[in-house]
Length: 458
Image (cartoon, rainbow, N blue to C red):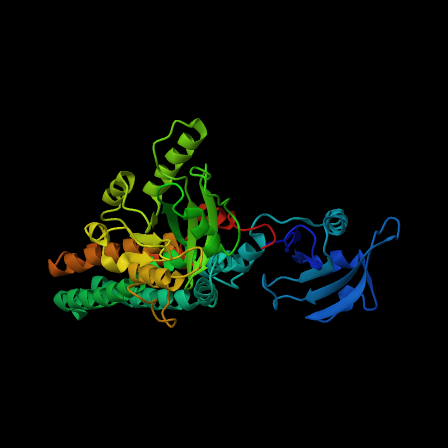
């Protein structure tokens, strides 16, 4: 049983209109009431009510801050404990003064993710929903937010629990056969195992089908913008980001390092890496930048190779084209507003013509064509239906694959009429692996590791 009370700042630190401090635990209302002066004492306040008042230093009776205090009584709160949220003026000093007073009471600073962890431990949410909370906070596009919101709402949890129930039925049937063999025919039990294993494997396949898209929506596509110096790489970054993140000049070699920027194109999050122009150089600093560019090129999920349509292909570009063969890549023909001198026939020897995108980055023309090309490359032209339950978490994907393999082992064993008490080991293993997704069979170390990744006030 959780017996202590915790507090943390739930809003970003810095200047803002308001800041929120959250307090949760069995003594939250009583302890906060010691430093809040309002018309209705907090201990007498009804649940889900907001009270205007002041934070008072109990030692000097000095007014510290003007606040609104929200009271939520157990179990009708996120953590299912008594929760108090203090809304003060935004600002580092204001928040620090309130936190200092709270920590003088019987309250301690919350650990990262401890509020959500308490919601999990108290049965308010399961582990996959808790992870969905973090995905919600980190969402970089509307679609990623929607996917995370469905996970927080329990869409994935409900499917996992249905599959685990099917496996419980299967294990119960096996137990009856083991305990009362005279009332069952083993061959019928083997058929039953095969039928149920096939059903659960098919459902897992449906979830895994969304995994690649879900992972992209959750984490974004690491995208390296590469090409020779002065072909428009930095201009492309600035255009997509709608900000002057990279310095743009007519001088080759201006970009000396890899610049990162997150953007969303057609609801697809991209982690853009603007790289130094790849060329041979004697400049020591530029040389380091070129090496970093080559590393980014190697590790990226998507390559946007920018070439100047107003010039014939250079030897360095032919080398780059050779390297992107078989990679997820798009060639951008920049400066199409100028007379064209590039030979498209040569380009089409290396890359699908549909993945060659004519653009004028300076005039911001052709961005819609780039969006279409990215969608075609990663989503076969469109995202899956919004009604689907996406699997986006790497941990979930790994456990689903393991559970499927365990059920495949059970199916194969049933086909070979291996004793059913041996088959049950694989069925139980699949049940446990699915349970680890929602936290029913997760060990304490895993739970601690997951919540340690959360921000402090969540």
